[in-house]
Image (cartoon, rainbow, N blue to C red):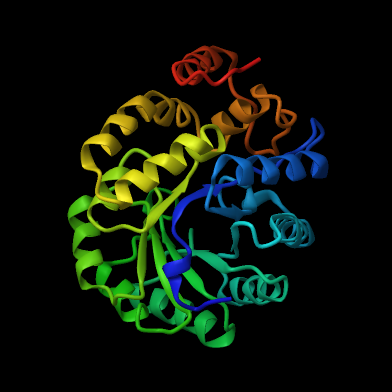
Length: 299
């Protein structure tokens, strides 16, 4: 394990958590998905993040999924555990338990709902970083959390040896560029937004934590490679091909569309937990069409 974030980069899938029709976890499909991503060139797997329905998994389920993904990956790809919470104590405990499971890093979302101040955010992340000696990636997604972590707060945190990067889902390139330019060399800025990931990587971002990679992992791996190598024209051309799929995967709240898509590829059942519901029938055709444009077969 390396507290330098340089080894964690490229195409990182925000993995869906497979479930049966009754909402129980489908372990056989999880095994299949991990192998699928290893074979398709995904660089890292984020287990039990937002796309993995962290909000509806019990703590024992959450840690069991992380443990299984680590075991199956077996060092072939990096494993990042989603361990964020709006309770500092809970996030600290999840991070500590994930560290015991030998994850390569933890992903910690900005606390949601309770609307902490910037000082509260700083203290929250510093307490976890001080308490658990595992590489930690901050996650700023104000569209879901309401609270937006300022660049100034991120830069205060970036000096901590255990905080190796941030997943930036703001889609704000001016802000992203400033953060990349001002952050320490050993602090990585990752995109958390498939629609703008190419542009952030062309500015110096170190990869993309992706929803789309669940459905088109090989293309997303190539996209990240091209963008991080500065091959602007080729990267933007591939992004243009992927754009219909990016858009279709957010036709309803994530992870509703992506779970339908992965299920339609025959990789897992259609199970999802309330309060999320299955994809509306009227939205399946646009998603199927977007998948078809990339020659991805759906049932």
